Image 1 (cartoon, one colour):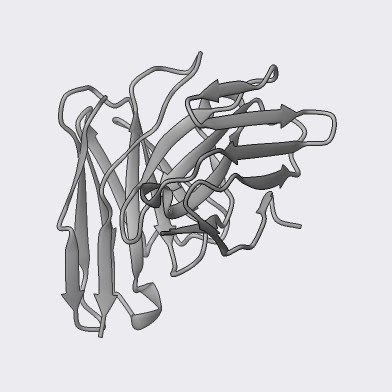
Image 2 (spheres, chains in turn orange, cyan):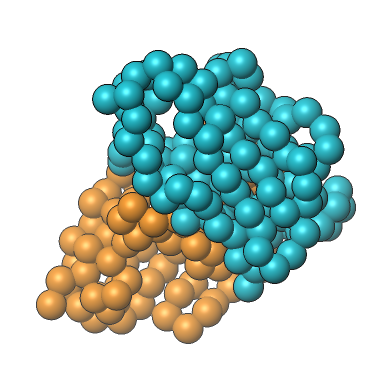
Length: 110
Length: 118
């Protein structure tokens, strides 16, 4: 079983749509959770951290369910610029052992 | 945010040659640097963790004699792919953290190096 599993995608949505990505992780000792965004042939960039209480940053909402070892990312009012691959990342103590999901590809179309 | 650079951004080499990739933290001192590899449409896979002044810790399945890592200063780590073969062709990405062994440490990623071995 992979340490971090994500929806395989790809997701093709029209502008303005709401889209949700799911992620599960296998290591119950994981303490830190993140969503990264990676554009084609570029490095990953931190989109947002994910907290137990859930958190929101503009059009992006992240949720964490420790009991189910499940993380989600909701994007509202999708923009063309949201097109990218979204990586679910978990880490244990210190973030010195980040484990990446394979990513979910999102394409937002006009 | 903190800036991490990599050099070269792209390299094409012949099979059997060695390739050195540099990772630099430009505006902060990185106590720990990480090296990842990413194959097309696959996730980033951690290859090794490198602490300044000490030997790197390699992930299971990563050959330390093939992927030589040197972290000689707080701002520079190098990855040398020795005797490269076509199967080593990949996107190599480094990252660096600022803090020590406690607390939240954000990893800042370099722009990556695309290696193609002919």
